[in-house]
Amino acid sequence: MNKKSSELKILKGGRDKGNISGIGPERFRWAQATNTRLMGVVGVKVCWELESGDYFYQFFHLDSEAYGIDGYESLINPNNYEVDYIALHMMGGLGGIFTTISYNELVFLLKWFYALNLKKEESLPEGSAEFEKLLDMPVSFTDEDEKKLMKKICEPLQNDSHCINYFLMRMFGKDDVAAGFLLDNIAEDNLRTEVKEGVLLRNEVSCKRRSRRGRLCQSESLVDSKTGYLIVHSELNVVCGEEGYKIRSARKLQEMRVSNIEAAFLLKKIEHIAIYEINAIEEFLMIFKIENPSMMDSIHEAGVLFTSFNKDNDHVQKDLYFLNGDIHSVYFITRGEQLVVVSFEEDKLKETQERLSGKAYRNMLTMEEELVMEEPVFYEFVNSGEDDIYDFFDSKGID
Image (cartoon, rainbow, N blue to C red; front, side, top):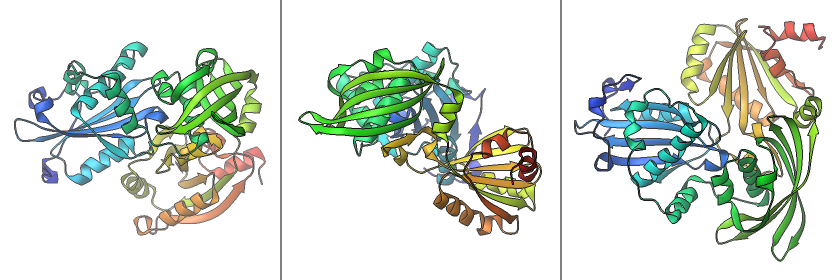
């Protein structure tokens, strides 16, 4: 299956559809999906053996809230490194593990997410001609089949807070299928009908008492809605049985608006910052991109921002959940030849510094300073247009 790297073809739009017209159940070899459905995203990779004898790989990024099928790449005759590189680039930040799915499950999954493209009027990604045939494939799929698939692509829940945080995340995102998967013989539920759509930024869970029906918990949620920031108080009853942790009842207690300043205060975290001088910026940037295919990057006026994510989604298990709790470290490479790194936990910054001191970046970086900022400054610096953090500090009167 693994051909030489020289045979690799990275396919972009306007492709030779004759090579892939035969994809179907008889050409299917395997498919895998990440167990991240409760996060609202799923990554999928598929392998087909074409009539020509070539191996054709497809990679999908699926979003359950807004975009449906929103990312796609494909390769012909890649080696293992190339498959892993594309998978890391597209799905490395999802925080899950891959699980095997069948041909029917693959087709059902793609068709379900494609329905979101249609509902939200979102176009398919470039190269969609290569998989549009799958979207028209008939597939027999029962409610029980869908339940089995959901079990595959959802990680096992570890505690009450894990269940509540995922349920509220999906519920505020109006992702009814995933929220419904977490319900167990629901006795009372006004949350899904009474709360506004939004993004769960922060959630704090406290458990009042155990009962014969499970554990009664209260939750305080900070939500970014279309009309502004909201605090939503709710009461949820969590049970744990053969199906794992489930929500037995969910009731909204109170909802109130909060200002941008109040929301920022609730989201504030200590920033652990390391500042480096870059000695060979073009070489460093090239090697940094190669070494970190899973990082998300964005272009800013004064440089390039890279975000690295944790390898798991364990932050969802905590009583105090933050949306950005999956971030490991953030790197800003500036035009002024600085590298500014921030982590929200001291040990994670130490891990990052050890990585940057490795042989891949030898003689490229000079450490200048480490800082601990009680008041957040990093993202304000990134968006300021300044390419030197010390100039930014001077402009803000920060010592």
